[in-house]
Image 1: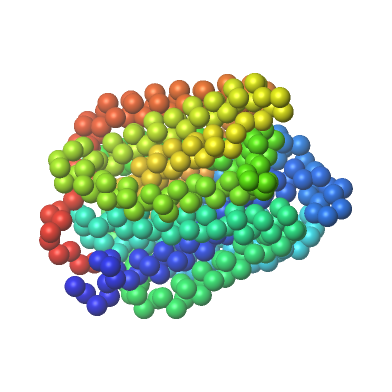
Image 2: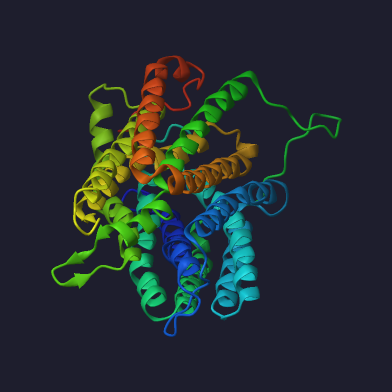
Length: 450
């Protein structure tokens, strides 16, 4: 085994793991308190917010969560055309640190300026650090999917701790202290990344585009690459549907928990922002077992393609909204109009099972299908559609203000179940268009990183 490996994977994976962990600490810290800060009364003496109504707060939340991902497209182009992935990640981390530093200042101009820096920072960092994970492995390396699950657990350690630490500091003590703490986390991520460069070697360096001999024209896509892009665009549709449902957590479900869930547990009132940590907690808890389950499933010759996992995950995610519908029905029957907190626990658990079948799988799938010369751009496109899913989530949350939560919860379940079922039905036909990109080599073979 190579000296530059740890627990069967390149050491560079763990550098990217910790860097992304702190970036997600920053992002999910913002996610936990943004809508709550916007809706907190502006005349509160202890910890005033901006005093917006729920609909306006959800609208801004939707735009913000969409734009952090939309900017991944120019972030991917920046890497492909100019800086390379490695330097783009460094730039993104710097912009994030600056953005949070500005947000720590209590002024309206600082709030909007800080959001702009954060949007630009995530755009430069997010697609490129994910692409670098794929760059650690050769085509067909069976460790790649597991590597993305490990990387994804790192994401969720940050996502779990941020709502607890940033959420408590922001919601209970001072909103701007919370924004500042999220920035301290990102600064730690930058330190890890800088000191870990020796383990990344040539991964993420700028690669010039090939030109046709004797011309200034770039080499175009082959027939195989075009077929694979068709499948990738279909997987993008899955991503939009999934995040449109899943990201109700930071918006509609966040406000729903605050207003209509009985959060009293053994004499302690659980802050609404704390529930944001449940997703990440469940990912950390079951991420490893699920990764090994799929290895076990594949070794027994069962259908285990990325598209099958994504279709199944969409159905399971939708099922979580059945439990939320149960909570909505309970609010109609209780005297105080509130439902038990356990509905939320169950819904979040099902959402995470769906998430682990879709999100890390999709990240790995894109690095398999993308032409090497466009991998950062295509990863940026993936995060663009993630952003569209986040915006869809905001629109769904806004619709709930008129239609009611029960109607929205049932509708989301029905749509996810139907969409996932259709994908599973057409899996075999779509697999042909991948031309073997999703296949793995003999798992007993020793495969070194490129």
